[in-house]
Amino acid sequence: MRVQLVAGNWKMNMTGPQACALVQGIVERVDQRPDVDVVVCPPFTAIERVKDELRDSHIKVGAQNMFWLESGAYTGQISPLMLMDLRVDYVIVGHSETRGRFGQPSDEMRPVLGYFGETDETVNRKVKCALFHSIQPILCVGETWEERQAGKTDDIVRTQLTGALRGVEPDEMYGLVVAYEPVWAIGTGQTCDDEEANRVCGTIRQILSELAGEEPADNIRVLYGGSVKASNAKGLLHQPEIDGALVGGASLDAHEFVEIIYGAQREG
Ligand code: PEP
Image (cartoon, rainbow, N blue to C red):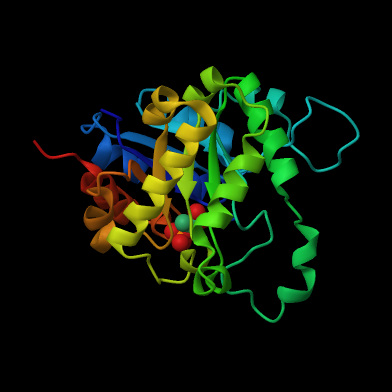
């Protein structure tokens, strides 16, 4: 049985002191629940302080992005060696906000989205690099609203997974986590309904099994992400194909985040 995983993506929020306060609030409430794996992904600047706060806790730390080379003239990038230095366990790769596929871009953001420019090729390099350095990638895939309306959800997910995992050996896939994150549900308050999220996560597992074989695919955790909150977590996380959640906005509130972790608890 795959252990449920709940990961909080703090995005571009939390200064060091704010991050410490948030993580203390989570630890106080959650450390008695070791049967769900928990990860927080602070901004790079807060990782060290958060790691320190979590030194006696089972909660793991992830980064929100990573470059695919170890060092070089890449201004502003963070390398796998830097993350290893901070003892980071996970890294989010291919998030729609780094692919430039924002759910509802504001008029101000629309003209500059090209700046982010993550592609399946760069996502592939990052996945391989993370696995090579024993940092578990949380690989995000998902369709925009227009793509869903056009009936392309499964094709988009297949293209993104195939592109991201090109050249990854089946026995390396055990280190992978996949998050199904419909772009239209991220930060919008609009959640994919439970059965449909379950269906797409099942399709993802099917594609993983075609790419890597049944056994690795059975061990890969497939999360759902997109406006998960305390009030909808249980319905989503009790679906058989959903192994946890990638949580954005609601992970910034210790009480909400912990309720989601409780919601992930498998019964019986
Ligand atoms: C995310 O950033 O991965 C996410 C799912 O955000 P939110 O929960 O705010 O929709």
